[in-house]
Length: 385
Image (cartoon, rainbow, N blue to C red; front, top):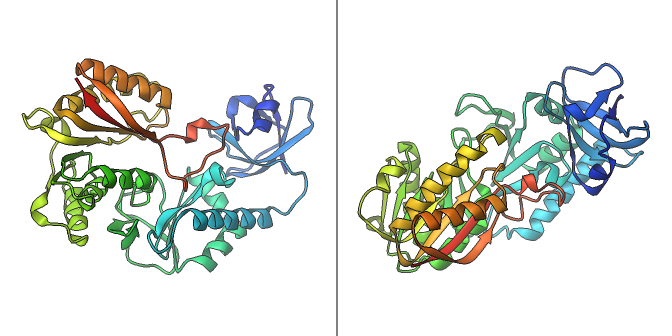
């Protein structure tokens, strides 16, 4: 087995729970394969520290897998998969919800492996082709998934939109699922991520609880998740805005699938910033844009974009109305997000009363020493002038 030695004193960092080593922090003590493989991690004195998954030619070179010197990897992987399933069963009532994240990579001690569940279909997605090949060779995962789901699909990053590789029993890519007793149509092939933004489930349910009798504007609405929940919360009227015409059509379908009044929802395939320039004001505006910072280099520019967007939103919310801001950019921390909101409200010449500041759902766990995986930020404020 390949051995890697730490070039930096990161022993304590790893033992505390940070599972990543970057390429500049390690030295290979032998020839490596061209794809991801198990490795032994040694400290600077060449003492055994942990087992990891080494990915050559990747900046994120090693993901810690286990600190146990002994053990069967296949059995350990299957045990972790079953533990992840058991955790979801305890968190998510199956009678209300059948769409959730089953494996959240390092958060479930299955580094780099993501699996989302839509009814009886499991959708896999890995961080790069090398890790993808690695995990598809692990019998502990393939065996567990094959025994648990009727269909298994692989959604490769970087492939053409709409392309899936079926690993078991090809099914239709358009699926109907339920989330908190609400119906959604999900396109696991052409949809973003694995088809649905499952991480916002709890925040969507929160919107339902505060939407009654309000006019709601949902920006970057995608397939209408927040919109439908607002409708179920008896909102007076909901407007969904997304640049994608296909997403808007999906939003309309999801609205009607839940037997909500057709005249109480409007989906506009328009530029969000054009909508923000009109004179109409709303009781509630939800702004959940796509990630604006794909790398640390883009962070400064992204912060300016967020401030510009959120300040415009604040201006269009009625006094004592609801401002809902969200970001899925992992390079934007919770502290960064708080500062963004502060600057946005200052620019809009108003203040805010925070009622909720949350993140992703419990089916998206992360290691306590890896705050980078706590990527989703969601804040609800009442506008004060």
